[in-house]
Amino acid sequence: MGQREACKTTRKIATDSLVISLKELVNTDKPISEVVLRDRWLLEMRKHDSIFPDGWYTPPPHGIGVLFSTENDPTRTNYTTLRKVGYWPRDDVFLDRQKGIIMVYASPVDKATGTIGDFGLDLYLGKNEKLIEHFQNVYKTVHSIFAQISTGMTFAMLFELAYAVFAQHGLTNEGWISTTDPTGINVGHSIPFLDSAEVSKITNEKNWEKAATMISKKRKFINSVEQTRIAPGMVFTIEPRVKSTTDPSLPTIYFHTIALIHENGGKELLTNFDKIFKLSGMDYLIDNRVLALL
Image (cartoon, rainbow, N blue to C red; front, side):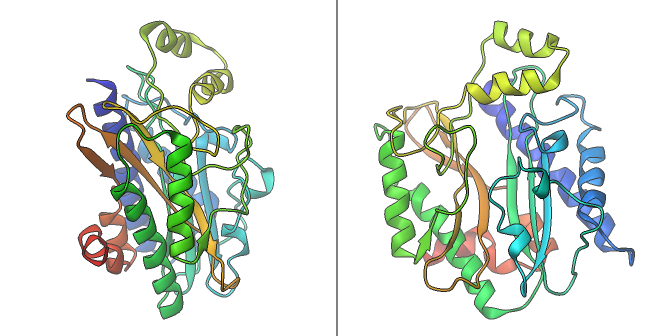
């Protein structure tokens, strides 16, 4: 399996595992804590021998982020970085099934190629029309950025394009930090393709955090200075975390997507969200409906 397919397959493992976990948990009457969802999701992903037991983005523990908040108080999902201990999953923060906001993120790694297949998004379980419109606006923004990507653009140019789209939609990408990006802020990064020697080094590394750091350092960020050019065969994330510039009561929203640039210059956006949208009552974000509004 090639690295591009490995990325798609690994991301799908995270997605399918989350669907199974959510279905199981929401069909019970038991309280669901952040740790309960994190551990159930991790257990399901670990059933797949093709990926390493933990994700590369660590901390947080296991390379997984799960945060809960509500429409009345979105503070917890308005996090600055998942690496901070205060934003690791907790066993005393519980899901509100009527008005809850859920942030989920996983960073699985394919064993054979060392390719990452990150996945994440925010979900909303409530019915507040203002919040629903906010989610729709943010999701349309991600699709709009992708639609305007072309080969030959530098990552810095893509960053500038993204900020122009944010402005058009009354959004800003400021307010969070990337501890590994030298500029501190970005809208995504490359999916690094490792050679066989690098894969072997990661596989044989006894300390997983050291292996994860090796993967992390291979990325190029979509920030204001990076001059890497978009070319056929490239794969990169589009994952801004944006908030409204006009209404501070609205939550910060996050959709982690992956752009694949095909060898013929065509492009594909990996979302893998639709099953989760249906499960969460967020049919208003199904991809084909969003694309019709662009």
